[in-house]
Figure 1 (cartoon, rainbow, N blue to C red):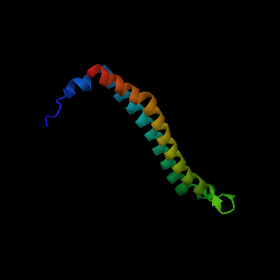
Figure 2: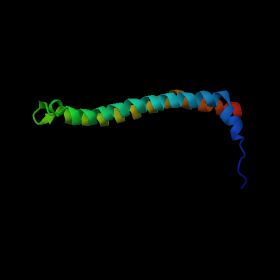
Figure 3: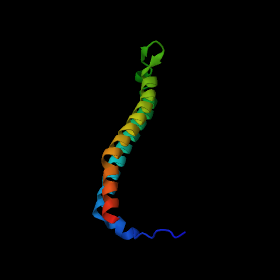
Figure 4: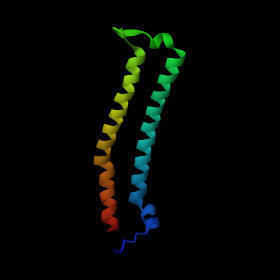
Amino acid sequence: MAADQHNWTNIANHPRFVELHRKKMVFLYGWWAFSAGFYFLLLLGAGYTPGFFGLEIIGNINVGYLLALAQFVVSFGIAIHYGRVADRDFDRLTQELVKQLG
């Protein structure tokens, strides 16, 4: 079984690969910064504004519980958005790169 030999340096320097990598990094780091900021605001808010986080909204459900649950909504939302962007942009760029290299 002979493995295919690829010139990884040429692939890494290919303009399509550079474009794909840049787009993915901009997307991933941007959404990572947003989600990390949202997470740390939750922690800071809980620590420094317990009165606000203790405000009851519906029955025993307070602002803190709603913001903690919002973490899950944000995580799932980002995952769904990534899937759509990957299908639309990243997969297309990858297929174009494979066609040009093949």
